[in-house]
Length: 61
Image 1: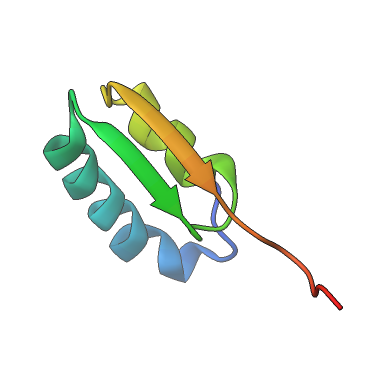
Image 2 (image 1 turned 60 degrees about the horizontal axis):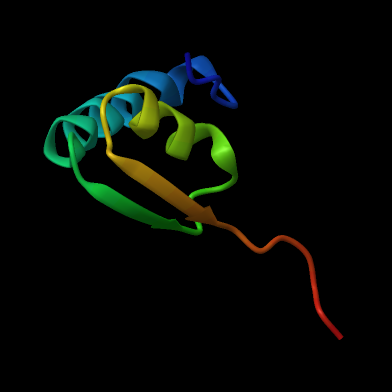
């Protein structure tokens, strides 16, 4: 299950992810900038055909 920074943000974010998971079931998903693999894994576990997640962290100089 997804772990969030604080319990106050859990219900709204979880509701959005559950809604998105229904829409994406059976589809190929490109997840850009969602903050790592948590959301991508969540969507994949709920039936997305495949998920490619991209997230850049840090500063490039």
